[in-house]
Amino acid sequence: MLDSRQVTASAPGKTILFGEHSVVYGKPAIAAAVDKRAYVTLKKREDNLTHVSVGDLGVSGFLDLKNRTIKLVTGSPFQRGILEYIMRSLLKAETEGSMDVDVRLDIPIGAGLGSSAAITVATIMAAASFNQIKLTNETISNLAHQVELDVQGAASPIDTTLSTYGGVIYLSKNPQKLTKLQINNELPIVIGYTSTRGNTGELVEGVRQKREARPEIINPILDSMEAVANGARQALLNGDHKTIGLLMNINQGLLDALGVNTEDLSKMVFTARDNGAMGSKLTGAGGGGSMIAYCPGKVEEVVSSINQFENAFQINVAHEGVRLE
Ligand code: PMV
Image (cartoon, rainbow, N blue to C red; front, side):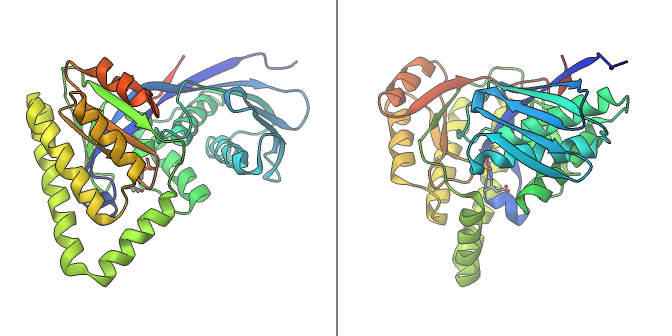
């Protein structure tokens, strides 16, 4: 008889508050899980192929878990990657036989909020639960990071860590050194994103080349970013709005010096400040993509001013990481 169980797991996306790029060189970063989640539902299927549907993206396809092949049915070849994350996640959780995998996203795509990591983490938890395997958060986080490495070739553990644990996390390249920051007040954060997304691999490579050519200039910038992240950690714990904002602005200047800022990002960054944000900076790899603004008491003003020419919305910290629904 067909197994009629159905399991749903969900995991949050993330935003980087401080330390993108410098984290690649072992410096600390601070990131927050956001209250936008990926939901993954699993059911058994009768035939021998696994069907995946990501309705919000219009992507669907079949996976052959035995032979590890993917057949995209709807969606662009560029979107095939999403099926790759799901296939590898199912295999990491020892899935055999065939499944129906239904993915629902309330994470906006292309906003740098780590949707692929959220899908990966939620799929691993859903599949493990379906297969009656107990996994600790540490294992889920490690397996999900391996999936990202396998699919992307390179990835920092930031996205998978935040999707697994939730909250606000201070972390360095060494994932063992991971501290959850107990922040009791809400963080009034606005995300703005451009329609064009930078290529993370190319941007990281660009910084590497700059550092190799001029270590005497770039290394002190990375050291400053470390000091910024450490100062921000304290300011976040103290709820010190002014210092949080100031350090975001300094971090933006340092990221600009590394060459990952763009005119579109600058426009959003300054619009946010002009409309009352205490600080603002690009977030993630840059080269397009997203910015964040810290806006105590001014969230609506900042959202609507950026929405005049790009997309903006408020986010809250998701204190809960991956969970079964
Ligand atoms: O653009 P995102 O959200 O994938 O962030 C990239 C962050 C970098 O520090 C630039 C790279 C990394 O792997 O940490």
